Length: 279
Ligand code: BGC
Image 1: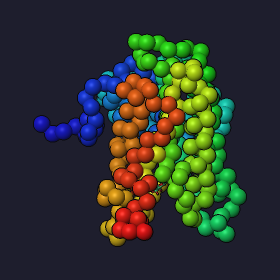
Image 2: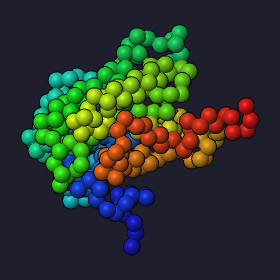
Image 3: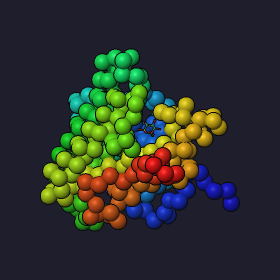
């Protein structure tokens, strides 16, 4: 029997998130898409947020529905707090509540410092960093209102911030992106500290180089890929599913004692690979 692509490589067949309600921002492509599908496969009902690309979002919804769970697409710009509040309010209406917020939406507007416009700086900060704030806030309000429901999960809710290895690795030519991810690290840790007493777990997943449209230039030719692999000790460019599986794990009760942590899913990119052959 041909393997169903949606079964997910390496994904446990056990439904770790059965009955939970998840929202993924930027879920119509790349890491967000794979994450939304993986959450559905793990048994969660899923809201597929997008800001552009309604058709792709509908495809994701259909794939998730294939697992026998509920899903719908919702257009909203994460950097607009009213749109985020309306999105979470609709979710509470349609699904009854929210258990998992994956603040994933992110983008790049690359330029050398001397060429970078304030608009390029601001756009990246607005989406990658500021955008995670209302998502976390609106989810946390509902988590606090509802509290722990033991049959569903040991925690009152999970917030998972999509970060990057660039929360700790400086990245020349990308000061806006690296600064946004450095900010995400502190946003995550501070919220984790603030919300843990209410049994809310806030954590981050930090991908390295993953094969998605955002970095196509870095892996789409054999030369580029060979160059990129020098930065990855594990010598494999990541797939979106690698990150999606990390998110499922962090969201699940298997990791219920993990709060304020960053899970690097980067093939060792943060291990100073340049030093592997001597400093
Ligand atoms: C960037 C990708 C890059 C990766 C590793 C991410 O934050 O969005 O373009 O491949 O970091 O450098």
